Structure formats: structure tokens, C-alpha cells
Amino acid sequence: MSSTTSAPIPDVPRHVPAPPTKEELEYADLAIIDLSKAATPEGRAQLATQVRDAMRDIGFLVVINHGYTQEQRDRIFDIADYTFTHVSDEEKRKYEGKPMTTGSYQGYKLPQYWHIDNGVQDRIEQYNTNRIVSLAEHPEPIRPLLPEIREFGKYNHFNILHPILRLLALGLELPEDTFVNLFNYENPGESSLRFIKYFPRSEEDEVKTKNVWLKGHTDLGGITLLWSQPVSALQILSPDGKWRWAKHIDNALIINAGDAIEFLSGGYYRATIHRVVQPPPDQRGSTRLGVFYFSMPDDSVKLTPLTESPVLQREGVKRQFTDENAPFMEQWRKGRIAAYGKTQLKKGEGNVEEEYINGVLVKHYN
Image (cartoon, rainbow, N blue to C red; front, side):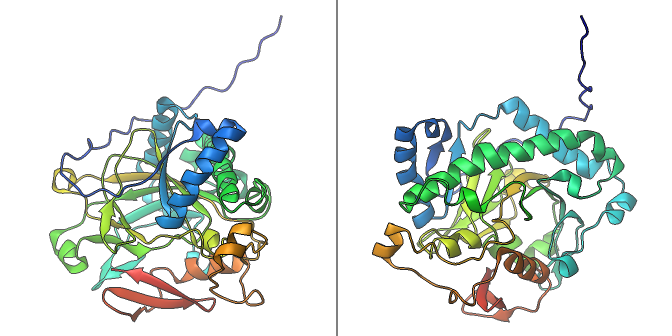
């Protein structure tokens, strides 16, 4: 009897994050969605109401019981850290992305690329890969890990994103697969995995930027999946105008809607402003490692409201542009990616800075 053996799993060092903060922070009140209930029609009907209300009122929610184990989650964070600690600066530069010219984040984004405020550049490093990892070359140390990275991307896409998209469709009283059919795995598009490392900054830079590490913004795509990690820094602009912290929950995901979902839902679902700030005192000096799946509709999707929705027919549609002038997803992402952190922003009211992308007013909150 013959037997086959699978390739050994590459060894990578363990990533040990800072412990969760003990500071008393004002946390955003986010709905917690038990995704295991989405396995039945009755469960989906119940969850659809929760998801609808969360995305309509706040634009953020938390997902638990998604089927990915704590051990699998920890392994992905080990891999994410490895992409920064075990790839040389020389090789990172070789695989550095060129978002201003390509409208894509694929590859490395090195620190000091974006302007934050008062002459301070970012201290953020990223490694981005399309969900189909074979579409690009990768640094040699990462290549043995690509099968795991690919499978992790597929899990995010099919086991978490698609169930959430079905619930969003039900919330608009549309057929369940309405949004799913716009987020195809194989079609040309920019749904991507992103590993991010935030490095501490000098006190001088913190003063100059009012402790803001990444300005308040909306995400440009469909649904963002952020795997919760213990270093507190993410803040959400609540409907009452106050910034509140996102609370860490072990092996949960923090999920939010982006511009494309707001456009497609005629403004019914919110692309909520959020930002990254200096961690609380007991976590200062720690690096913050993030693991994301940024989903986007297919490049060929025109971002016009789904007016066949009975909900939109009752509630009305908030348009950012006419149907004729609506951009395709490819146009929107390229415009926003090329401009982010590089264009000269105009001062709006209060701490708001503004720019126009494809004729749409985009706001940044400092």
C-alpha cells in the first residue's frame, strides 16, 4: 500500500503581542454576530436583522464563531509578523508597491510613505497580496508560506465574507446571493490580504499629530475583515460624533462596510469613519500587528444603487452621483489608492480635510 506525505509546515517564530490594556476606555457598542447561526435559513433571518441594524446605524460589527480556530488564528499572526521580521530591507524595496502609479497596494508599503500631519510621515509597514497569491511574485522567505496564506484568504472570502454579504442582501430584502455575485473570487479585482505593523513614534511626533497614527477615513472597498488583536488603537466615529475604541475579543473579527457597500446600498449601509491612534499608556512602546482581508467588488462592477431593493424603494436612495456618472470599482479604487496620503487636502469644517475622488467628496478626520 502506497502512502503520500504532505509538505512539512514551515517553522516560523511565535509572535507574542502585548497583553490587552487594563485602562478604562470608552468602547463602541458593537453588535456581536454569532456566524454559526448562519448555517440555517432561520438563523440567517435572525442575523440579517442584527447585521442590517448594525451596518445601517454604525457601520461596524463583531463576528464570533466563524469556524477558524484560535490555533489557526495565532499561526496567521506568526506568519504576518514573519513577513516583516524575516525579509531584508533590500528585498522589501525590491517588492515595494507603487500605489500612486498602479492604484494598487500589492507588495510592501514601507514606513514614511504617507503624510499624517504637520510634516510627520507614517510609521506603518504593510505587506499586501491579492487573494490569488499567484498573481504576483513574492520575496523568497515568504514563498514557502504561500499555500497557508492562500488558504487563509479563501477562508476569509468564502466562510466569512460571503455569509456576511448574504445577510446584507437579506437586510435589503434582496435575493441572498445579490452581493455575493458581485464579489467573485476568480474575477479580476483587488480583494486582498494585508498584514500591517504599526511602530511606536516619538513624543514629538505624537504632539504634532495629536496622537493620530492614521487619519479618520472610510475604507474604499466592500467589507473589511479585521482579525482582532490586543493592542488598542482603532477608534470608530460614533453617530453622536464621539470617537470610541474598538474592544479586543479573542479570535473575533471586527467588520465594517466600505464606500462600495454604501454606494451599492444607496446609502442605507454606512461606510463609517474610523482611525488609528496612539495606544493607551500601558501599551505604549509596543508594536501593533494587524491582519486584514480587504474585500472589493469585481473591478467590472458599476457602483450604482441596487434600486430593485424593496427597502430602498420604501426608504429612498442617497446618491453620491448619477447612475451615468457612477464609477466602476476599478476606477474608484485606483483613484482613492493613488491619492491617499499624497494629495494636498483642503481644510473643511473643524478637523475635517477634504478632497474629491471621481467627483465624490472624500473626507479625512484629523
